[in-house]
Amino acid sequence: MNASVFVTVTANPSIDRTVEVGALVRGGLHRATAVHVQPGGKGINVARALVCNGIKARAVVPAGGAEGEQLISLLSDYSIEVVRVAALGPVRMNVSVIEPDATVTKLNEPGARLTAAEAKALADAVINASHDASWVVLAGSLPPGVSPDFYAELIHRLANDDVHVAVDTSGPALRAAVSAGPALIKPNHHELEEAVQSPLSTVDDVISAAQQLRNLGAQAVLASLGRDGAVLVDSEGVWHAEAPVVLARSSVGAGDSMLAGFLAAGGKGKQALVSGVAWGAAAVSLPGSTMPRPDDLRPHLVEVHPRITTGRELRGDN
Ligand SMILES: Nc1ncnc2c1ncn2[C@@H]1O[C@H](COP(=O)(O)OP(=O)(O)OP(=O)(O)O)[C@@H](O)[C@H]1O
Ligand SMILES: O=P(O)(O)OC[C@@]1(O)O[C@H](CO)[C@@H](O)[C@@H]1O
Image (tube, rainbow, N blue to C red; front, side, top):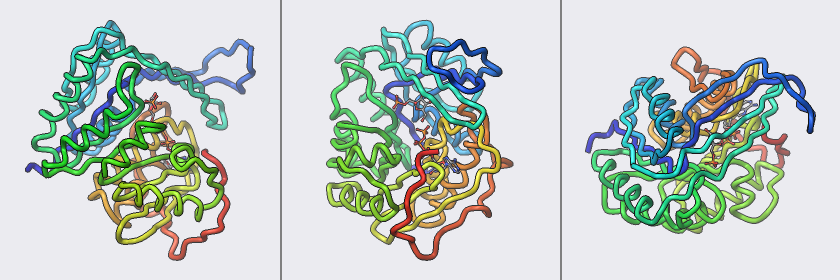
């Protein structure tokens, strides 16, 4: 096994347009002050963050239509090994509107339907691409036509290989993936609430929810909590860490950057959490979904709380 290859899977990729405006007024005309067009979808972002830090990444992605061509062309700016799976339907366009205080309003398209044959070709491509992987990251929503069991089935198919699987998704796909026993899941606050079907207002609530998902099969839970940092719950313990962001620009992709930083630092324990939180905070300070490079990272600013303040109220996403 080549321990340095990270494979990412983005079943529902996107071209991300981030539009910066003044204060958003529902129904109003807004003239953009800046626009960023970047390759998107969670697995693609994880791969971008890894290669921006000199780490080898292979991205498996279905890409159809003129937008698929554009996605592949945008990806050529990065040294990612791209495994393209042919698809008929076009890649979606997702729009993020950013206000001056860095509030994000996101409009995500559902993505084009994948046929049963395309979904099978995607799954087979993932298995082929994973033969020398240390980690396989299954990330983002599933497009129409793809069963919510898609990630769970991949986890089962990869179980005999010497790879770890990380999952970052939501809803029924997350619940199915958890039962398949992945090494790691990375829900955000909202996804965690949805997975345990209960509101989570304190750090203690987050830890209990993470334990519930570990009881259901996930080996470790890395919960990203926006400006409240992140909580890691695994077989060795529980940690909460956070880092300040001096000037927040855009949190789009911060969770993906966080996951990449966590995996880049070994994918388990306190030091990986510190790395993840540093990469997440750095992404927030950059425009659009720009991924941090080594010079952007400030791991010394990450605070790991020696004792978890269980009753601490969460301040909200960003
Ligand atoms: N305002 C902020 N201040 C400091 N750190 C932040 C802030 N927002 C995000 N972060 C850092 O980035 C990480 C990921 O953020 P968040 O929880 O918003 O991820 P997410 O919802 O999965 O994002 P996305 O889906 O856009 O990738 C957090 O765990 C935290 O470390
Ligand atoms: O619609 P999904 O698949 O849940 O999320 C897609 C997405 O919002 O996730 C990334 C940020 O994490 C963006 O690049 C992309 O637009």
